[in-house]
Image (cartoon, rainbow, N blue to C red):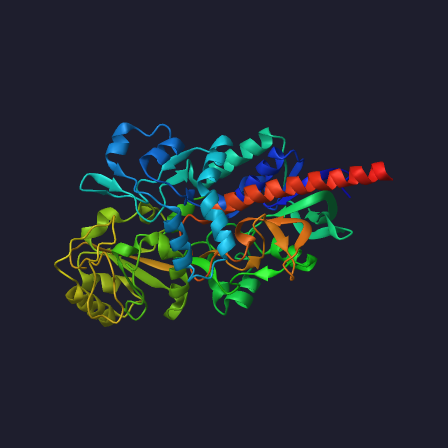
Length: 508
């Protein structure tokens, strides 16, 4: 039994949790952060991300405010474009097939830019996302896909900056501490029961913010909610996101919400480890240059539109499609014409790769792809491409196929110039879409849509945001937005409750 009483306990150690802790401290609360992972594996899924933030902006002047040392030379050679609130709403709606909770969408969009500036005040530095969101094409960079900035140092850099800020502001962080249930104090929350080194301990608080991720690292829950075969997927991020926060809240009376059968999943290095390794070459598993490839399954057939949209708008749903293929694997095939566009992580150690001077030799080296089926696919694909449209990787160029059962809508170059490269991919799961229902103040709601007293939530365990797919770099943005709101709301709840108790004491 812990003798210390906290105003706010934050369960989780990633971007959403740390944003909540920082915000609660700003509101005058004493804050304890409970991180299930040991210190050297802290940061949740956030530590594994590229650090991108999708936010509303209106061009170079707005980006200059976020990246003050952006040079005039950089600005002159870059088209930052703009990403309006309307663009953001359109993407959130279109990508989720308009299932996203409109009130939550409104909160993300209209708080995005201000939250990035708030993170800067906490000590987070941002840089332009050259190389991932803009290619040097004919001497000029043009940003695409709605994402311009990322945290310096990627997700790991973001977490380090947020932890430094939290510790500086007096936030206490306990590592290796697994939260297992919420304590009751009458009708309200009274704290958290934890397990440390196999021993239960009760830690008391007036408010609790749950921000400890989804259930993607729980094989049983994946098979139960996502479906058969999902227990075989590789987990791209932390092994500690097993649904604890969701279960704690549901046991307390929370309402489940969102698409429990949906998840963010990508085409990922086929023989990657079962879980992410933030200390190793995590990025070595990324296989996101597929828009400039063709992807074939074991039968040698294409099975999805590699060029349907910018990578940001398709990558999070293509892992599921790979998982559904024979043997749950595929190959991404490139020729020499686009070799310069293949991202650096393909070159890292550990890639399952074959290279050959001819397509016949490549088909032979892949081994587990039907030889004749593959060669037929490439021949039919090459013959179907529009020859009168120029290739441009910075725009949806409309260079497409015609007459195929599976269209390639953009960036359809012929596969004919050697040497050829092929990379084998499987399914990597990032996070799950099902979770808890919250309101616009980040209060967790019960089955009658009433707030649970003192319980707040943010991050990947919030349901209602993503369905079927996910717009890239929305996760960190939504985590910071709702984390900040959850912390502020929790601190306000504590203050209000303390004021009422003081009034009752005087009256008594």
